[in-house]
Length: 215
Image 1: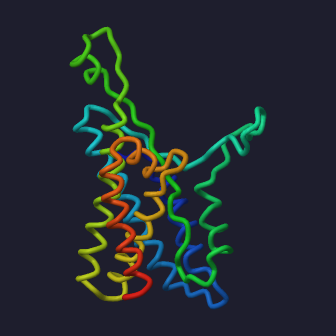
Image 2: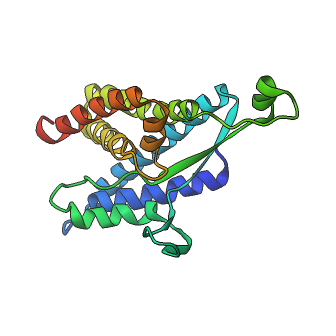
C-alpha cells in the first residue's frame, strides 16, 4: 500500500523533524532515537489511514514532501523547481521556537488523490471521468488527523517516557497539519467541510494547550 518512494520520503522527513525537535546545546542521542521512532510511527500510521480511507472512496493517494513553487504574488516570482518546504521548515522553526523544547514544524508531507477508473465509471459511464469532490478529499485528510488525536489520548494513558513523547508528538503533528495553508491536510479539510475542520481544530487546540500547561 505504501511504496518504496513514500517510505524513503517518510523516513527522511522523520529524521529531519526528530533532529530538529531535540536540537539543543545538550544533544542527547537517546531522546533523538525516541523522537525518531515516535515521529516515524506517527507519520506512517497517518499515511496508512488516509490510504485506507481513500480506498473506500474508490481512489488512491500518493504521499510526497510538501513543496511550493511561488514565493511572491507577482508574475515570475516562483522557483524553477518546487522548494521542499517540508524539509526546511522543521529546522527553521527550531530557530524561531527555540525556547519551546521539541515544538517544531511537523507538517512536512502532503498527498495527491486520484480517482480510480471505476470511480468515474460508476457515476458517469465507462468513458467519462470525474474528479474527487472536495468533501471526499477533506474526509481523507481528516482521517489522518483524527487517528493522531486518538493515538495521543491512548498513549497519554499508557504513560511512560515513550508514551508521553508519543502522545505529545501526535498532538503537535495534528496541530501543524491542521493549519489551512497551501496543500497541507488542514487546507483540504477546511475546504472539504468547514464544520469538521472547526471541530478537529478545537480538539487539537485543547490538546495543544494541555501539552504545554498540564503535562
